[in-house]
Image (tube, rainbow, N blue to C red):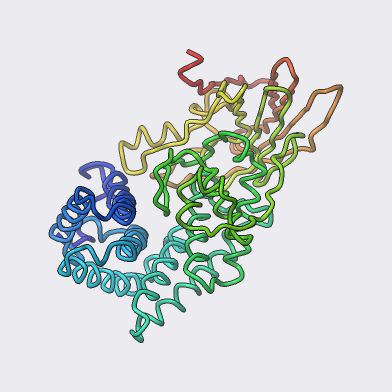
Length: 446
């Protein structure tokens, strides 16, 4: 079936295509290729890799099947295949290598042909990823005139989107920490490919500094917004660990990485030379804005975030949510979300205010969902200036999500962080309304 004829969104769809797409990014096959590269005499890895590649090639001819539906998936799979070929093309059968090269070239042509769709409807991480795919695929065919144009076009698309994608503080238009890391890996890949535009290198460092201020190098951070653990780079560590991606960005922004970072992270070991990384900023501890309107306070064993910033893309109805960590473990968390095209009721729940640690007015959600990724209206929040008082930190913020009610009603939250604990208070502009708060608790608290 031609890819455009496949139903991935209506109620009659077979399931959430995300899981099929994730597997077909073939990062696991990059890990197999690394095993073959490191242990060329062990035939087990080569046999499994060839079996997987033959299976995909046989079942996914050009433009047929769901794996040709998303341009971003085609780009990410192309990047994985190029790594596989760079490591083990001399050990793979020549027929497989030739077929892979044919698919890679066709992938570049597909991305160019389908570019109007991406530019008109996917002005987010997809546009950056499609541009990256064109650069990587174009560099793979240096003697081909059309492929050389792909490189120039890909860089143009990346720079065009980056001009609007990242804010001066390193946060992005996608209200999601997971997607911030995802784009960071795209930028890191472009730098690794060589001769990256200046804005790519600058955005890589800006985004890395934002993640550092948010506390990524100090432990787990909240799963704000859509959190699907999407990756560009092939690693064997836990996908929720953002530190490897951040340290790779710092390494590529400097002259390389120290040996201990390579021991800790696949990303650094395989993609960075040894050297001296850029120095990251310290995590925000005084309740100030770490970026994107997210305050962070640390007092004794308590670490608390207050989220007042909001963006429509990949964001949730979570203004003034307050994740809390104690001694490295979550007391109040953020559920993120792992489904996009699964049951809409499940998708909507994980985006809702009910699933987050926010105050709801008369049990009404801050935002009303419209399809899987949009909202019927928007809301804005602001983070106040934090106060330090007698060993305590006070964060506060407010938002206008309930400005659509009659009468309009703004909500304010104050968070007190002390050595002995955390206190949270909410106020409504209209004293007649009822405020309700639900808390996403980790299993260890139940």
